[in-house]
Amino acid sequence: MKPNMRNALALIPILALALVTGVSQAGPRARDLGVPFDGQPGPLNAITDVVGVTVGQVTLIEDLDGGKKVRTGVTAILPRGRDSLNLHAFAGWFALNGAGELTGTTWVEESGELEGPVLLTNTHSVGVVHDAAIAWRVRQGDPDPTGYWWSNDVVGETWDGYLNDINGFHVRAADVDQALEKATTGPVEEGSVGAGTGTICYEFKCGIGTASRRVAIDGREHIVGVLVQANHGLRDTLRIAGVPIGQQLREHRVYSQDNEAASESGSIIIVIATDAPLLPHQLKRLARRAALGLARMGSTSDNGSGDIFIAFSTANAAPLRGAPLSLAEFMSNSELDAVFRATVQATEEAIVNAMVAAKDMQGTEGHYALALPHADLAALLEHYGRLIK
Image 1 (cartoon, one colour):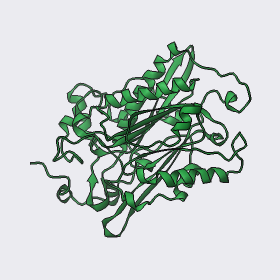
Image 2 (tube, one colour):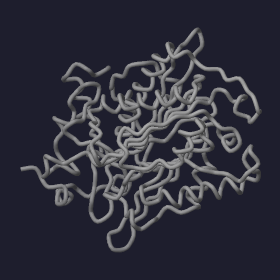
Image 3 (cartoon, one colour):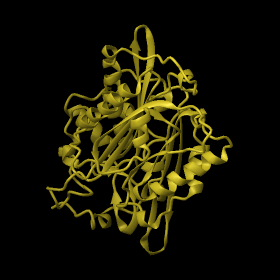
Image 4 (cartoon, helix red, strand yellow):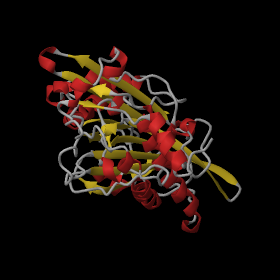
């Protein structure tokens, strides 16, 4: 008989501090383990392969009195880096299942533009992150291009309350400031960091993941980059590279160990960036395609899952500078197939990267989540003839 998740901790040897707390260390990514993926990644295989996109993260890990533990954080994505404050980006969004929150999307839908950063955190910290982001923007000096102090920031969330003392409200305005200030180009830290510090997917420890794809259209190369805050899925449905991993690795399941009828009640926020010139309605179509990457992993997006996606384009900077009349460049709808495929591929890989980068984590009130075991993953892929050596 397999041990129950609530008493299995006693069967695990005492772990080193970094392992127990889940402090992230640079390590292998999914491709390094031999996981096969379709498509050609960009140089960093990250959302920051899209020129101008910056990412900043603050990770909050602290052990409190009474068994409470802080395992949460903030992730900030700026479409145009600092220029995001005064230069919008065409955008579109889609809710595959809406048991979650992505603020500001009413205006994204209405205007077709993303007016600033996208921030991610835990469910009960959306308010403080939203307010802090506005205050940070005001402190930068100038009003927006219309001359008004207008800000309707986009803040997404997933519920990390199994590992994190979510009702302790540990995210502060200073954490938001730091995430925004430290946002940079280059490699993006993955796993149990930022808004993914306390998240779980497919009943393994999970977190932040990213990936990118190159696409060639009419002789021009474009990049599609994806970043996920992954906190979704049940073990039995998990598939990686088409292999039914979840049906083989059945121990230490967080939610369904004693409840085979458990529903997928977590969430995933997916942020898609591209430098391809797309109009808002085309970006909405792009956002929908993230659902297919999620489906490749075995997710069924059940009733309690908040699966919400947003896509933006860094192209068309000149037409978005506020002139009364501008001309925008855009791709023909008939040329979008390559961009759709890239989105599906990068979404799938970003989720697997989040799982591979995550470490075992002990959380609040004795709860814990084990990370996807790398050796077992490689062995199963090899068994099914899917391992890349």
